Length: 195
Image (tube, rainbow, N blue to C red; front, side):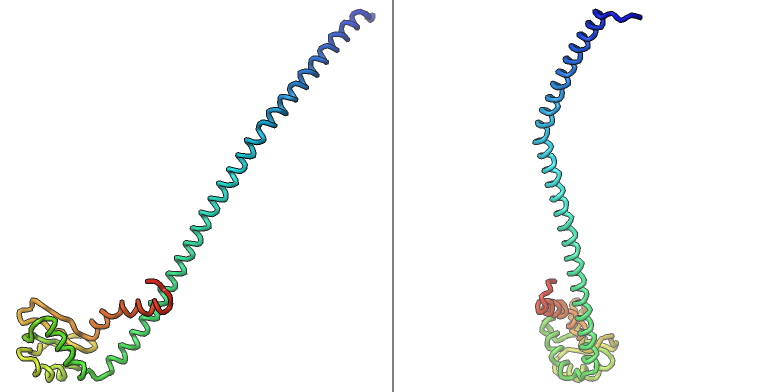
């Protein structure tokens, strides 16, 4: 086939116009894309800042939870150590008390019990070792009688009104039990541990 210069010229013209048109469209599209990207950059930066801020808040929250948990665990260990120390001190004290002579203490325990109950007409119980000491001290409390049954305790007495409606446990065990929370609190405050 022979070449037709007019046809080639027409094709070159169309190709040139189409190419120019395509280049203009591409340039225009490129400019639009650049403008769109330029417009998106501040929004992306804001989103980035928000994500970083949320991440920091979440990290702070997790850190506080971890620190709070560690503080609580440390406090619990501190309280357990304190409790163990207090229990050891009380065990040692109880051993010394059980070996001691309670005769001087017995009369004051009886006096306190009768004053608390508001009557000297009481039935008094004690342990087997203190039975004779308590029985002899009862002579100073008119109307007081010794119970024939012994109780299990380190020492001291349990006084009941004759009708049984009131009881006052003034055993050494009960007195220590009443004092233990106060002593524990005092020890804790000395060592700076809050109970």
